[in-house]
Image 1 (cartoon, helix red, strand yellow):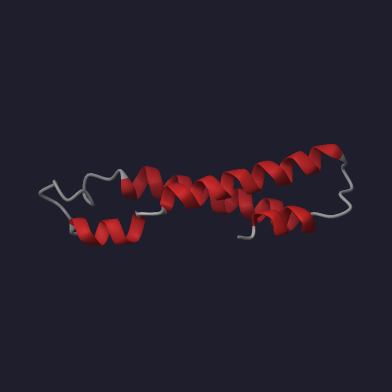
Image 2: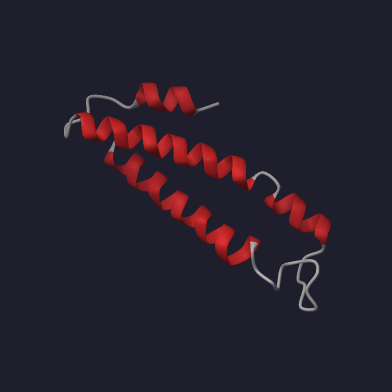
Amino acid sequence: MFEVITSEASYLRSLNILMSQFIKSEELNAGSSLCVLERGHSHVLFSNINSIKSVSENFLQALRARQTEAVLMSSISDIIEQHVS
Protein backbone atom coordinates (compact mmCIF):
# COMPACT_ATOMS: atom_id res chain seq x y z
CA MET A 1 0.00 0.00 0.00
CA PHE A 2 2.90 2.30 0.79
CA GLU A 3 4.31 1.63 -2.69
CA VAL A 4 1.04 2.65 -4.35
CA ILE A 5 0.99 5.93 -2.42
CA THR A 6 4.63 6.76 -3.07
CA SER A 7 4.34 5.77 -6.72
CA GLU A 8 1.29 7.98 -7.22
CA ALA A 9 3.01 10.89 -5.47
CA SER A 10 6.03 10.45 -7.75
CA TYR A 11 3.79 10.26 -10.82
CA LEU A 12 2.04 13.49 -9.80
CA ARG A 13 5.40 15.22 -9.34
CA SER A 14 6.35 14.08 -12.85
CA LEU A 15 3.10 15.49 -14.24
CA ASN A 16 3.82 18.81 -12.52
CA ILE A 17 7.29 18.87 -14.10
CA LEU A 18 5.77 18.04 -17.47
CA MET A 19 3.40 20.97 -17.15
CA SER A 20 5.92 23.49 -15.84
CA GLN A 21 8.93 22.54 -17.96
CA PHE A 22 7.43 21.32 -21.22
CA ILE A 23 3.89 22.54 -21.76
CA LYS A 24 4.72 26.09 -20.67
CA SER A 25 8.10 26.02 -22.40
CA GLU A 26 8.82 28.81 -24.90
CA GLU A 27 10.78 26.37 -27.07
CA LEU A 28 7.76 24.11 -27.47
CA ASN A 29 5.32 26.96 -27.97
CA ALA A 30 4.15 27.22 -31.58
CA GLY A 31 4.55 31.01 -31.49
CA SER A 32 8.25 30.80 -30.67
CA SER A 33 11.04 31.12 -33.22
CA LEU A 34 12.67 28.13 -31.48
CA CYS A 35 9.52 26.02 -31.85
CA VAL A 36 10.17 22.29 -31.65
CA LEU A 37 6.59 21.08 -32.02
CA GLU A 38 3.90 22.20 -34.40
CA ARG A 39 0.63 23.34 -32.79
CA GLY A 40 -1.18 20.16 -33.81
CA HIS A 41 1.52 17.90 -32.39
CA SER A 42 1.56 19.76 -29.11
CA HIS A 43 -2.22 19.42 -28.86
CA VAL A 44 -2.05 15.66 -29.49
CA LEU A 45 0.64 15.19 -26.83
CA PHE A 46 -0.80 17.43 -24.12
CA SER A 47 -4.54 17.85 -24.76
CA ASN A 48 -5.73 15.75 -21.83
CA ILE A 49 -2.93 16.41 -19.35
CA ASN A 50 -5.12 18.56 -17.09
CA SER A 51 -7.64 15.73 -16.76
CA ILE A 52 -4.89 13.22 -16.07
CA LYS A 53 -3.38 15.48 -13.42
CA SER A 54 -6.77 16.00 -11.78
CA VAL A 55 -7.39 12.25 -11.58
CA SER A 56 -3.95 11.71 -10.10
CA GLU A 57 -4.48 14.47 -7.50
CA ASN A 58 -7.86 13.04 -6.46
CA PHE A 59 -6.50 9.51 -6.26
CA LEU A 60 -3.51 10.58 -4.17
CA GLN A 61 -5.74 12.66 -1.89
CA ALA A 62 -8.00 9.64 -1.26
CA LEU A 63 -4.99 7.42 -0.58
CA ARG A 64 -3.48 9.90 1.85
CA ALA A 65 -6.82 10.35 3.62
CA ARG A 66 -6.96 6.59 4.18
CA GLN A 67 -3.36 6.65 5.39
CA THR A 68 -4.17 9.29 8.02
CA GLU A 69 -7.10 7.21 9.30
CA ALA A 70 -4.76 4.47 10.46
CA VAL A 71 -1.04 3.89 10.19
CA LEU A 72 -1.70 0.25 9.40
CA MET A 73 -4.10 0.50 6.49
CA SER A 74 -6.24 -2.58 6.11
CA SER A 75 -6.96 -2.07 2.42
CA ILE A 76 -6.93 0.44 -0.40
CA SER A 77 -8.58 -1.75 -3.00
CA ASP A 78 -11.86 0.16 -2.65
CA ILE A 79 -10.05 3.42 -3.41
CA ILE A 80 -8.33 1.91 -6.44
CA GLU A 81 -11.63 0.49 -7.69
CA GLN A 82 -13.32 3.88 -7.26
CA HIS A 83 -10.63 5.70 -9.29
CA VAL A 84 -9.84 3.05 -11.90
CA SER A 85 -12.26 4.33 -14.53
